[in-house]
Image 1 (cartoon, helix red, strand yellow):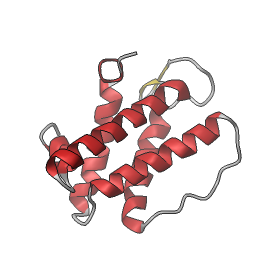
Image 2 (image 1 turned 90 degrees about the vertical axis):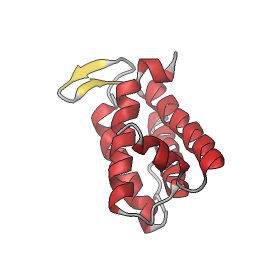
Image 3 (image 1 turned 135 degrees about the vertical axis):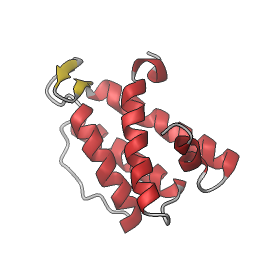
Image 4 (image 1 turned 180 degrees about the vertical axis):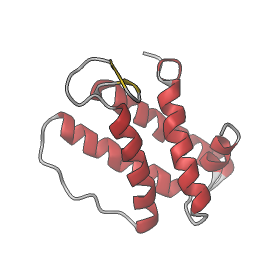
Length: 129
C-alpha cells in the first residue's frame, strides 16, 4: 500500500482542515498538530480493538486541531466493516487503512518540523492549500 498515492485525497482533506485551524489560531505550532495526530492514532487503535474509550487530555490549542482532525476522520472512516465503501463524503476506509494514513502524517510533521522549525509542517501544507 502506498499511502500517498492511494489516499492522497484523504491526506489533503486532513491537511487542509488542519491548516484552516492553524491559520485561525496563529499560536498553533507543529507540536500541537503532532500531538493531535498521536492522540487520534491512540484513540482509533483502541476503538478498532473495541476497547473502552479513554479521556483524551491535551492543551486547548491542541484540542482545536484534534477536534477538526477527528471530524474529518469521522467522515472518511468506515467503522462498520473492513472494506472501502462509497459514501456521501467520498469513499470511506477501514481502520487498517486510516491508522497508517495518520501515521504517515505523523512522519511528515516530524520531518518538516526538523527541517524547517516549529511551523515547518504548517508552512509546507500552506504551499499546497
